[in-house]
Image 1 (tube, one colour):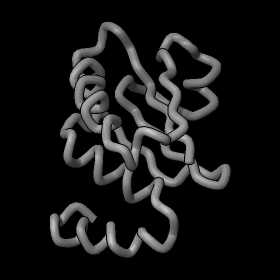
Image 2 (cartoon, rainbow, N blue to C red; image 1 turned 90 degrees about the vertical axis):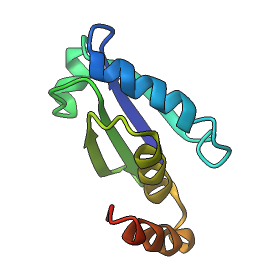
Image 3 (tube, rainbow, N blue to C red; image 1 turned 180 degrees about the vertical axis):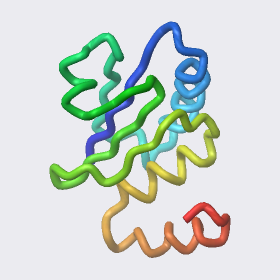
Amino acid sequence: TVVLFFSSPTDLIWESQNEALKLVLRDAELAKLARFQIDMANSQLTERFAVKVAGTILIFKGGQERIRSNRMTKPDVLRKMLLLHSAPKSAKNNYRKILHQCHLF
């Protein structure tokens, strides 16, 4: 699993999301994720991935984009999204049940 975070130092939503991500990525289950922060000024990558705004998160698994999130800032929602889409297949059903109970999936 590879996670790309698109950032901009002048974007207030990104600043809020960045603080939430710092909290979320302390979680032992998520700390091992391969993750990269990409500045929106990098037009080559923003065009390649069709990213229009800072605060976009892309999750790739097996070389395929699995999910795209824009400007999500709630730590609990970020954590659930990252866990669901980075978990091995055997664990996904458990995470899906949790998300259904939270009305997030």
